[in-house]
Amino acid sequence: AQSVTQLGSHVSVSEGALVLLRCNYSSSVPPYLFWYVQYPNQGLQLLLKYTSAATLVKGINGFEAEFKKSETSFHLTKPSAHMSDAAEYFCAVTTSGTYKYIFGTGTRLKVLA
Amino acid sequence: GAVVSQHPSWVICKSGTSVKIECRSLDFQATTMFWYRQFPKQSLMLMATSNEGSKATYEQGVEKDKFLINHASLTLSTLTVTSAHPEDSSFYICSAGDSQELLNEQFFGPGTRLTVL
Image (cartoon, rainbow over all chains, first blue to last red; front, side, top):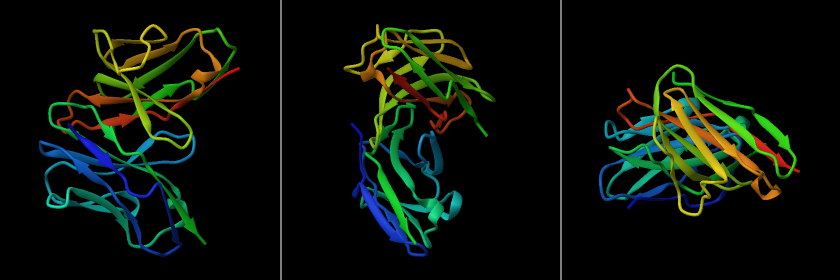
């Protein structure tokens, strides 16, 4: 069975500060991991994905995430927050042989001016 | 890139009527599509998985007679909310898996906001 835990349902950072959104997963087989962003009343946009290649994954809009098997983590970071980064962020896990995702509960990022 | 569209983007209907939501993969073939429901400030809840040409597989607790799913072609799946009631008001999102995509990635539609009066 798989699961995803996103620590912190709300995160606030100042504009220009480091963004760190946490995601821990549980999977008995090698996972595929995804980070999505959702703006109000919109669907999900893929930020980045880990698919067993490089453990440090770079995505769009300056985001990146590092897959750490020993810590079962896939935290999302961005060096400098921008006001436009304010949104809801979801971590998701799946495995080879299935399209079915397990989503985390989401983290709402607020960027303070 | 893989694009998924949904129609309509929002719909308002009266209680007791049925509403159909379409989900289309525009530039790829989707053997598998998913329907999600999202309540305000919550995560996505998977309602069902549909495979082209076969019956949808519903998640536990989802009424299959109320949420009818049809996946008649490799580019189109529909969700019909039958005899809608105010508690069915929600944001519905579909996603699709590219049959040529090996990495099991889902591509998401923009969502449909359903309001039942």
